[in-house]
Length: 241
Ligand code: F6R
Image (cartoon, rainbow, N blue to C red; front, side, top):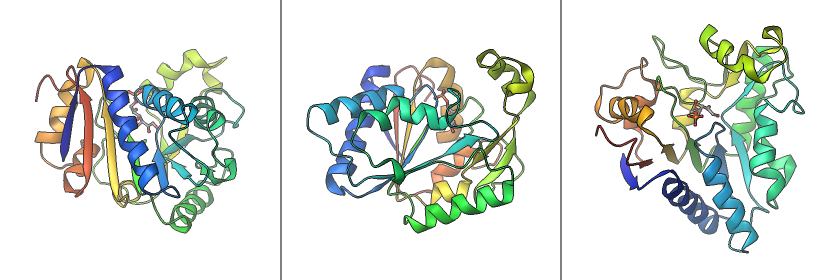
């Protein structure tokens, strides 16, 4: 694992965007695995700025996202599809039909997951996978568990996640209770993995991920076994290492 120290969130975003930009420059038709959440928003902003400056071309890029809620439409502003469109896809010259997320509106979980794994296989797997880090060490929606799940699968969201999400929806009943996520094998097959981490509240879990044992209780610890992982973290996130 290589750790790149950033001064703060903005510096982390610039450094992470530079790594993605280098990947796109070296392989203009590469497959990027992408993440949602608050941490990569600054990275996407930097990529959009590089595109606007004429430094980056997304016209041959394919993307596969980590996860999507089950049962909400793409038009719903809480869907990850909406997030990606809002933060990146609508702002660069990417071909929309080459951007993939699990199909949240497919009610048959087995079908949705098998189809998504087939898409990832068909595009040849991720050249670079961007990840955020959950406070409990989750990556994608791979929550602490007894085992590492391999392929794309359906997860039941914990009650605390559902309650935390409730503020974004009209009522409790409207909050998604499940999500589709890439599995650990799907993530680990990426040629290169880039993790962005920011903030004091991530310091304890980042220490466990980097220095602790490899365990499904801290799913991101499995990244220690990958041979090309770059963690770009700010000083607050690195404060316990
Ligand atoms: C996002 C995802 C999640 C987040 C993680 C960190 O697609 O799968 O694993 O990366 O929850 O979220 P933030 O960046 O909001 O702290």
